[in-house]
Length: 207
Image (tube, rainbow, N blue to C red):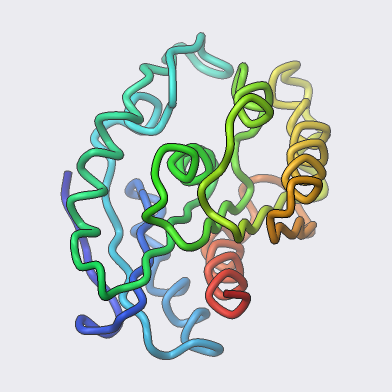
């Protein structure tokens, strides 16, 4: 996987984000938005080879289009953790859409990440809510967000996203996790760069 680095290369605060080509097209906007509030950080953007395979925690049928989810998240996380070897630094993981789901899932697998910045995460993913309820998360700070129009879709799988994120948020709060749920205006494709920036800022400022 290719990595792209932004911000202060020697910062003690490191943000990790899985990205695709669209994310890279607007990531400078994201960096600029974060810097309005937090100036000292390093962001490592890790480009996926195959979005649906690299970020899905287990195999699942396609929710849209024809490409199934390949269940390659364990392999991806192994590569991500190689970027987190400096124990003097504080690491946060985040992302948008399926990358947000991956960030949430990753926090259940390791205690490396101090916080999770999951912007419009794909918590509609089959079986994920049940996974959350059956396991303990290792990060004490979790940011969740969703667009207020995201659940208003005809797709029967993706239309569950609103109910899933409300229930997941409540579940984490009930277990003492410092978790917020922010609602944004618009559908899933509106301002992903700005939404991701707000997610990272919140976790950095909250811890």
